[in-house]
Length: 102
Image 1 (cartoon, rainbow, N blue to C red):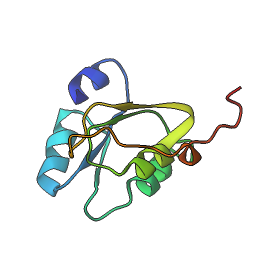
Image 2 (cartoon, helix red, strand yellow; image 1 turned 120 degrees about the vertical axis):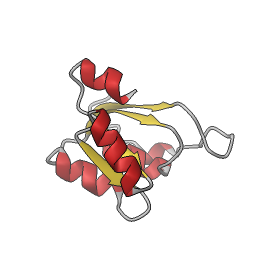
Image 3 (cartoon, helix red, strand yellow; image 1 turned 90 degrees about the horizontal axis):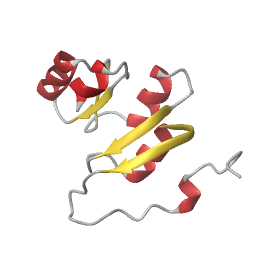
Image 4 (spheres, one colour; image 1 turned 180 degrees about the vertical axis):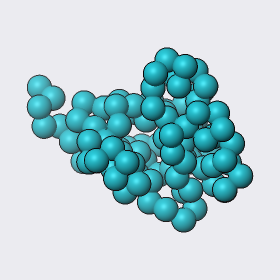
């Protein structure tokens, strides 16, 4: 997925669980890797994007839903690809910013 995205000009920020995974993702073309075991993903993403957030989060179940939604730019999209506990997470609507949506 990283290689397809970068080949299409998309900047990829990967969430990982080890330095080995981080090196692997960077090697595939990710611009940054955030270790979810020791860092707040939303803080790192917002720093990297200078407060803008990202246009798309592809959730594979490694980051809590509240962190994913906190990473989104205004009108960003959250795509849930997998859930580690075999359930689609329930995301409270209060986690979304509905300004300028209607």
